[in-house]
Length: 340
Ligand SMILES: NC(=O)c1ccc[n+]([C@@H]2O[C@H](COP(=O)([O-])OP(=O)(O)OC[C@H]3O[C@@H](n4cnc5c(N)ncnc54)[C@H](O)[C@@H]3O)[C@@H](O)[C@H]2O)c1
Image 1: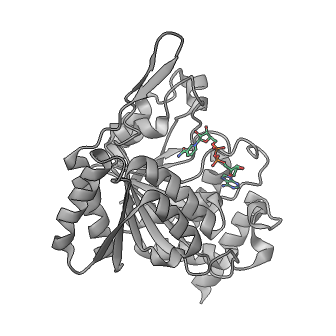
Image 2: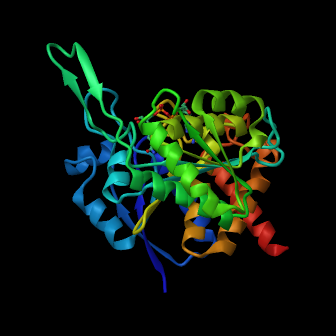
């Protein structure tokens, strides 16, 4: 029986990179029935809402979505649909792996970390307002709940256990944000003894940035609050070659959404040169989530084989290929792997 999955192409480079990913997933003969839905600026233009009810209904039905990036206007305008979807379905754990691609030269060759970011509260709870007169000040509330901390920290420990990883590092700023970051740290320290097979340590976010750019090999599973996780995951993407390579999974109890870490890349949208790898890898994470593990492994191997050769890379990685040519190369490697 085929699995229904909601498909949101999104804005900017979204259509180009999602369509490239669909070509690979189709070639894997994955038993998936796509249900197209819309979100972002394009949805606002065509359907009168950046996040139409039909999109939320589709995700509620299928409980799985593959999503391209969606534009969020800076300052004024509608609130982020990405944040809205995460909140609506309570997708509390944002899982963002960053690992070196074999053969792709970057500053390091031993990065293999998974960042688990709390995805529904903290500084992104959306509780902020202007203070009159004339926006002379503004106020924002960081909301952290014990239950919110507990579930994402448990997820990180259990993920580490499942994936055979050795250490969980909790990142915080409890020296300054004594109550909010302090609560996250306290809950982490309380839970850690239940996972005595996993090493546990904690580190302050600013020091973490410095450690990550000096010696990223010391990080295995990293768990942190929403704002720090957002920033650290882009930093981690930079360590392995850029945003074009980093996928993300948004996991909740009843729904999961898979997407790239990067945004709509308006500077290159429509040019056919975007790197689709991050959404492809998000697609592989989705296949794993749907228990199609062999297909996910094959997809990753085909992507690795393609990126290993300088001739078959997109421009952001120093190559010359268009999105379509790169996807052709991934499909050729898929055939070659199957023929082995
Ligand atoms: N999950 C999401 O949907 C999501 C995530 C982040 C940003 N956004 C939105 O995207 C828009 C643009 O954001 P931004 O410019 O800050 O970040 P961005 O990630 O879109 O782009 C940053 C830089 O990275 C490059 N880049 C990103 N993805 C690439 C790819 N696949 N291949 C090649 N180059 C790539 C871009 O060309 C740009 O130079 C904003 O509206 C933002 O809110 C959405």
